[in-house]
View (spheres, rainbow, N blue to C red):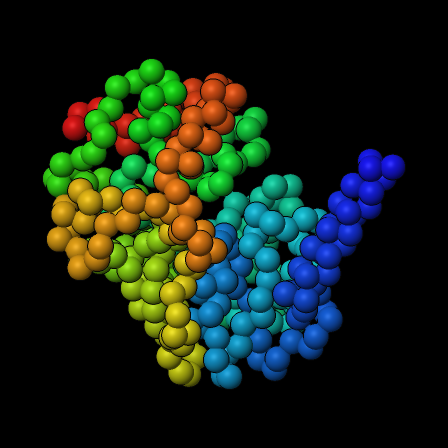
Length: 312
């Protein structure tokens, strides 16, 4: 009896989630008409924030799912949408991403001849969270519990590698420069709006997590994107923090390293609720113990960052 009840609840939850997704992306699904002169912004979790700051009456953007959330049906919907779009803003995506026609070149090819394309970089910055990584490794598709981020100190502990508990100011700055140098390298491969110079001076609003920029980046980048589109108007300030659903701890030694005008914060903030940092730490310790292959692969992939920590 109870098993059937639980299955019915799961099915009801799944149906509700599908309906909520369709409502959220109504224009993408064709349940609402797209505005005249619409464009599309495609990429990772940063794409929707870019859409928010570049969309206005002159160049409205249609909300679409993040590229890593799309399935085959979504990819086909996106191509149909692009066939009538006036512009595409897109991050660099390899051809046949996840076996789907979602590569930057493949998406550009779906546009009308008159449409404009602006390629923008995918942004990561380690200067405010030099302990943090957001990575996947082959063979492990799941994320750790509570927050989908890794603390290199915990990874090192799980791998039996001694590292410092914090970094001196010069090493914090070196981690920041490492991430900006990597961003410059990727920009040099070909983008139409750069962002690497926006990470100076360092302020707390530059990033919520290592891969979630803040308004201090999105707003000036939006101005550059609008200019690259050759479109009228300017970037739009939504009047609230952008991409702020998850905020990582801001540790005291990081605040001191940059002389930030911000209070240190021990805990996470997720969906505007405080999430105890110790709770996250213990949950991740258990997850690493259950996923030793992930730990080995992550330590290898994060070797340059771990060298900063081991030398501290």
